[in-house]
Amino acid sequence: MNRNRAPRSLWAAVTTALTVAALAAIGTTQALHTASADDDPAGAAVRQETPAHPATNTQERPTPHSGSRGQAVVELQQRLTAHGHALTPDGTFGPRTQAAVTVFQTHHGLPADGIVGPRTWKALLAGPPSVKRTAPRPATYTLKFTKNWNDPQNSRLALLRDGKVVVSYRAGSGKDFSRNECTSSTGWLPSGTYRIEGHTTSRGADAMPWNEPAVQGYVIGLADKVCKPVSGQKAVNRTDLFIHSEMEADGTQGFSVFEEDSLRRWEGDGDYKSSGCIKLHPDHVKDLFRRLDRAGWPKDLTLQVN
Image 1 (cartoon, rainbow, N blue to C red):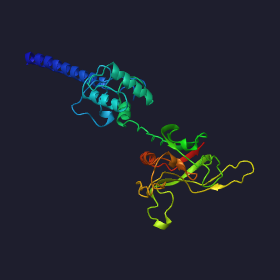
Image 2: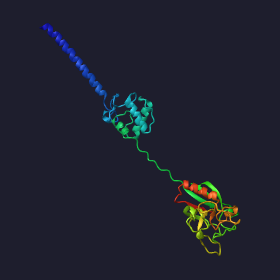
Image 3: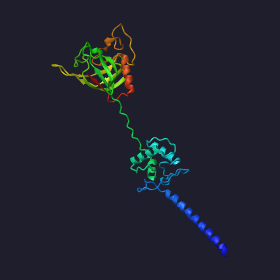
Image 4: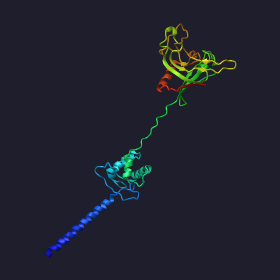
């Protein structure tokens, strides 16, 4: 009896020692799986693990840090890239990834320790802040008529975009070289700023033959303008002001009748004369319309006459 008792006691002691050693090992491993400094301000040891299926709960996620590898690091790199820190998702937590993590933590008010714990994961999973995009400011289009005092029928009409000339055309205003702004139907357009009242490509199309307007086809309407009289002259409110050409109501050229000057056909430089409006060559007024069509005919379009 006594001979058998000694081996049993020895075997029990060995078993107990192995059990204690195993429990100690388990306890040591669990101690290594504590949270990072971003959820424990005092700082704690970190764990390095890569589960087969990344957890959705930030408390259950691994805590990548410098030197970590695996799918969790790949997701970390993808999340950082979405937040504007371009990284290659190679699954290796190297210096570039660590630098991106610390910058991200700093921007989000977290301890910049380079360790991706629950609070850092939460900020990463929240998604990048939406970028507030400001719609580009619409371009400002204006028209500018510059008078040629030496030759009124060789003046210029320009289309400007944000103050820069897009295109410039020869234009005329007034008759018989008149430079008097207060002479209705003869003087050239008074200086100043004009509001664009409207535009059409078929003015006169609905008029009866005996009531056709003198100005037809492609026409831009201008607001009325009070002239600036010279000494001894009364101010006159100039009306029926347009930017136009000579053409039929449908924009085509009319036929010349008995070699007489026709209001429906452009015959030459003499047609730049007008009854105080601004007159363009038919091709030029159509080109101006095409450009303003593309610009959407800005509602605040104005004409500056200098």
